[in-house]
Length: 108
Image 1: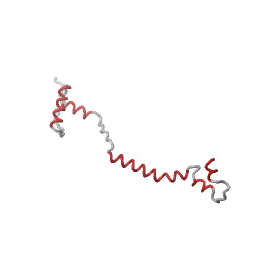
Image 2 (image 1 turned 90 degrees about the vertical axis):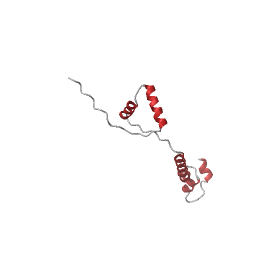
Image 3 (image 1 turned 60 degrees about the vertical axis):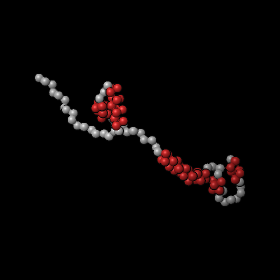
Image 4 (image 1 turned 45 degrees about the vertical axis):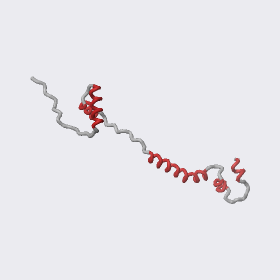
């Protein structure tokens, strides 16, 4: 009784490389003692990992500009809300009777 043979591998996968890339890859395979097919099959069986993309310089600049714009727009509102600010004093001293001065208010 003979043992059944594994299915024949007849499918191919075409990839495009420069001649220099192919020669370098084949040389690395030879130096490691593996075939190019073994390496590719190993990659196919491994989990797919996406390469990390680094931000392009213009994207970093756009993010920085957006941050500056948001900060510039928010600064007056933040300043008004700060205790001890002129806006907070004016809101508290609605009748302007002078019982408490801005300097006294700020010193508290």
